[in-house]
Length: 290
Image (cartoon, rainbow, N blue to C red):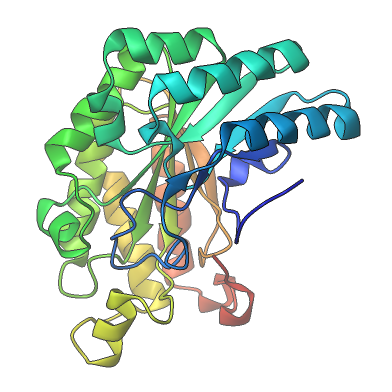
């Protein structure tokens, strides 16, 4: 398949066909992220996208899941996305789900009718990088969205029948704001009621503004044990009534967690408390990755 630059996808899309419909990220301003710095955001040529789908049909024959890349393809107008989805339906009637990255403001910008049109044509899950539930941290990392917008956007997607998969970053507030990050992330998960919630552990990317702040002594990284303590406090501050699949088993995490909220909340908290006292359970730094 033809791709421009590095391609990123959610871990759960590991076995999906990745279709690049945009180049880069429309926001591309988060201080911690280096994923799309080398790309200037633009839509790919529609004819080229259709050719890629035809190539995928010839090569794979059958495809059960497709993910639309790059960073926030949901920013595209329906007039661009719907023809792509219709072609997917024609070529791959067996396709069970199309996934897409989106920002909360992308969701809010689209009308209910627009979103339901995408759902009708196969989009089943929206991945949203929330990062933190704390308003000040969101401002510091230049997320470009408020806590209130995040909650409203995710709840809107839920209401319209989409699955929502959210990512959060342990340590994104540094040592200065670890408690605020933990508590406010726990409460925002509760308010959003997502289908899936995942916690990654901060890894600094050279050349990003956050990395430069670290080098300049303006940002303090947490220790491995402090990362675990932050995740513990975050879980303590969740109070979900509906089932949420929770994962903290990314390559960046020091300790792997896997369970459902709220039923596995106490078990995972106990797992973290044990790990905090036994550093031999922590992933070696050499094996951590984004």
